[in-house]
Length: 416
Image (tube, rainbow, N blue to C red; front, side, top):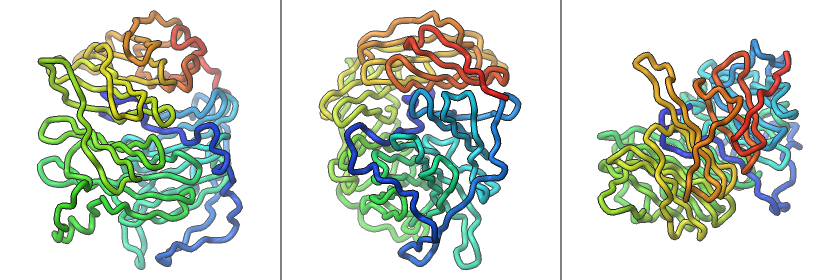
């Protein structure tokens, strides 16, 4: 998991397709010949790594999990990518055969992989490669599949740099963020967008590109452009409405765009008298209007989940959670879990607690869950108010499932 999941909603991977978007359901898997990029570079079909093998407990070592439904999902590590269609009992290795030695770039950042599509067949992966004599690197292309990893397409990205997050709201409409270090811990963010499922990308005009920074010829500061600041993260609630969070001058910053990312405007976040906020997680939306986000209070380190029902025009603060909370994960607008741990000087988890909210963070109730080994390194992945999964560091029982909103858990028997 990333070093920021202690304060962020567990949305390192965002699921794409909302119900009712039937115009976008057409498949993109009809490519059989190389397709040429507008700038002259080509990409083609890439076969998965042979042999496509079933991974059992001895070989299944993912670091991140994202289930699309109760049966279909993806898991990945730095150098491997797996897909399941039976609830995690059997995993198929679908790692692209030409994946660079550096592995899947961005897996350890917030959102190296995004899965979407009604059947969970689509995925977009960021990976670094070394380039070539005609196209010197390093480059950060996108690899995508529409066939749950049976074939992959490599797509060059303009102004590519260290990839941060990839988000698709539909099989056609998506964005990726790329980051580049600046002065005094600040960063510049480049946002690329696509409207054809990732076949081609273009840079949003609000971005300050790496080429601008490296040349030293920055354009005049444009009104409502993406500013320099740290800890950036990006998300989208509709094709027009996007969000960027980060920190600037030790204070959290929340930006919103209503025009597809062309202009960004700061949004105020209210807090109680005497409180100071230090970090805002990337919001998680369930549709265009209902959303939640975790906010850290500087004075105590405690967290509160803010909620909105009007698309983010107003955010309402909920009850605070202890400073030990490491993950907050919502499976629906109302239902969420919060996991907190404390460790000793050797990094061994000594205590662990799990909380549940039924009302978008207004109230939190401590659970005494049966089954789940909370003192392992646990990563939560709720897919609804009641159904969810947890990935643990226990090689004998890496995957667990709940159908009771987190009150009880059963190990998923991963097949050998």
